[in-house]
Image 1 (cartoon, rainbow over the protein chains, first blue to last red):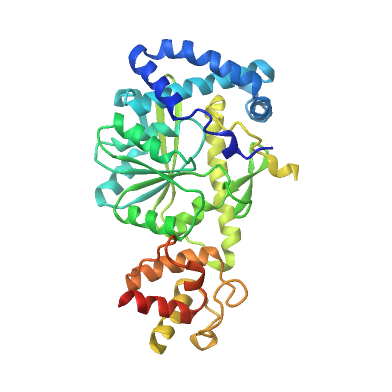
Image 2 (image 1 turned 30 degrees about the vertical axis):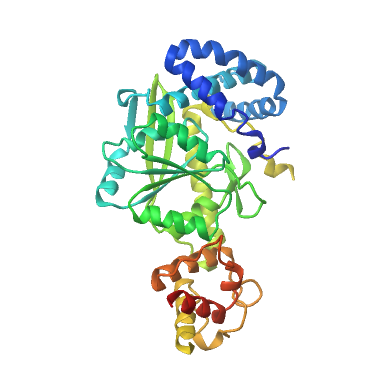
Length: 307
Length: 85
C-alpha cells in the first residue's frame, strides 16, 4: 500500500489554476460539468482509493444505522462525487468566492479573544471536510496571519497562487516533512507573534513510522501522528481543534478547545501523548459521524492492523 | 567556561524534568542523547528552544551541525560561547 503522500498532489498546480479560472469565469455548475467526468474516471481507475472508500463506508455506516448510508460501489461513487464538490469549495475558498455570509461559526469567540490578546494558538485540523476553508478564518474580522503546515513540495507555488487571489498575505503555507529544530523554532516565532498555526493531526508522517500512536477510530485501531501533539507541548500555547463541514448548504466551522497548554512530563510521556491522540480521534469521529461523506482520506486509514 | 557548563546542566535538568539527576552527575563530555543521558529527539527540540530563549542564540538546522552541538554539555557550551562572540 502506498503512503498517502505518494498518492496526493496528482492535481498539480496548473490543473488547479485551470479549474480556478473555469470556476471564476463560469461558476460552479460549469465546473461540475468539467469535474464530474474527471472524478468518475479517477474513481474507475484508482482501485486503491475506491477500496479505501468502500472500507470506510462499511465502518461508518455501522455507526450510523439510522442514516442508511449507501455502501458498496454506488456509495463509494457518491463519496467521490462529494470529494469533487469539496474540491470546488476549496477553489471557491481560495478565490475568495465563499463569502462570509455562507459561513457559520461555532466557538469563534474564544479564538478572537486570544487573537486580541496577541496570544498565538495551535489549531489541529484534519482531512474531514474542507480545511482550506480555514483560509477565511484569516478574515475573522481581525487581521491575523494563519500559518498552515502542509506536506506538499508545492507549498511555495500554492502560496503564490493563494496570495494572487487573496487580499493580503494573511495565509501562509509552510512545508514541513518532519518536526525538527528548525521547524520548531520557526513555529515558536509565529506563535509568539500571536499568529495561528494550523496542522492536520490525522495523517502519519511522510518519513518513517516512528512517532505514531494507535487510537481507536470508528471501531478499529488506526495510526495517528504524535507530531502535532508534541509540537503543541513545545509551543506551550492553547490548542484548539478545527473542523469545517458542509452542512445545510453552508460551510460550518467548529472551533473547539482542546487544551490550554499541553505538557508531557517525560516519565508519563508515552501514556499522555497516547491519551491526547485518542482524545483527538474521538473528536474526529464525532464530527465524522456528522458528515460521513466528507471523509477525504482515500487510503487505507486502518492499515495498522494489517501488520 | 566551567560555570556555563554547570549552568547548562542545571538548565537541562530543569527544562527536561530530570528530577532524579543532579548537576554533579552529568559529565560534560558524556553524550546527551541516546546512550549517555538518554535524551531523545523531543528533548532536543525542547532544549533547543530553551537555549535559544535563554542565550539568544539561533541554531540553524541547515547551517550548523546540530548533532555535534548537542553532542555533549561541553560541545553545547562551546557553541554558545562562539555564538556570543
